[in-house]
Image (cartoon, rainbow, N blue to C red; front, side, top):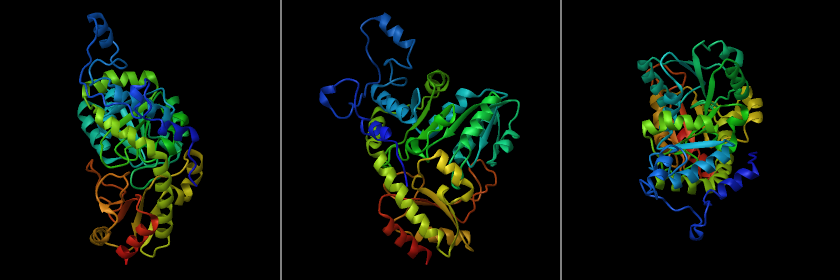
Length: 385
C-alpha cells in the first residue's frame, strides 16, 4: 500500500499560497513581465549581482517560477530548486554545469535515451562517459575512474524499472570525490527522496506527474543552495532553458492534486500489473513491486510506485507487438507519460545514442492513467486475445 508523507500532502495543497496576500488569490498571479524596473541605478546593479534571487530579468528569476521552485524544494527536502523549460533543460544544465574537458561521468542503470544522446555529444568537448547496469555497489565502484566527476543514476530505471541501492552508491561516490545526481521523475518527490539517501542533486521532468495533465513542458533540479546557485550561473543562465511564468502556473496547479493522483496511479497500476503477471502471453512484468531482487530496496527507499511499468511478451514478434499496441483502445500510442490518460509505447531495437540496448523489442511500456483499472484490464484482454 502506498504511504504518502502527511507533510507532503500539505505542501502540495498549499503550492498556490503566495508570500504576500495578492488580494486573496488562491494561486499566485502569473508575473508575465520580462523585466523589473528598479527605483535607483544602485538597486538595479545590486539586483544584477544576485540574479539568482532578485527579480531583474525573467531569464533569471521570476516570481511565479520562484513560487514553484520553493514548493518543489520543500517536497524534495532540498535547500534550493531551479526550474527549466524542459526536463532536458535540467539535464543539460547539470551536465554542462558540473563537467569539463577531461572529466568522466558514469551512468548507472537504464537511462533516458536523450540524456545519453547528450553525453555522446559531450564527447566532442572532451567529456567521456560509460554506463553500468550493475546493481551491486562494489561492481559499480569497479567501473569508476580516477577522472569520474559525476555518477548519474535513474532508480527506478527507464523502461525496465530496476532499482539501485541509492544510499550505498552515493556514499561510495562521495568517498571517491564524485558528485551524485538521480533522475527522480518516475517516483516523483512523493514516493522517493534521493537527497535524504545521500544524493547531491535530484532532477525531474515536470512534464510528467508533477504537471499531470499533458499540457506543459518543464524541468527542475534540486539540491544544496551552493550547488543550485553554481548551476544557475554556470549553465542555467547561459543555456537559456527558461520556464515560462504561465507554465509555472500550470505546474503549481498540477501539484495541488499530485498526492491524490499518485494514489490512484499506484493502485490501478498494481491491479493491472497483477492481471498481466498471470496472463499466458506475458513472460515478465517489470515493476519494482514484482521483482524479488528489488523487494528489499523497494521497501527501504520508496513509499510506493507510480503508474509506469512494462511487460515483456512471450513468443511474440516485433510486428505482433506493434499490432497488440495498435489494438488497444484506452491506451493511447504516444511518448511521455504521467497524465490522466493511459499510454503505451513499444520497446526499441537500439537506444537513441545509437548503441544496442538491453530493452527487448517485444516490450510494452504502460502508463496507467485514471480511466479505472477494470476498463484498462478489459482493454488489455481484448488486445492480447
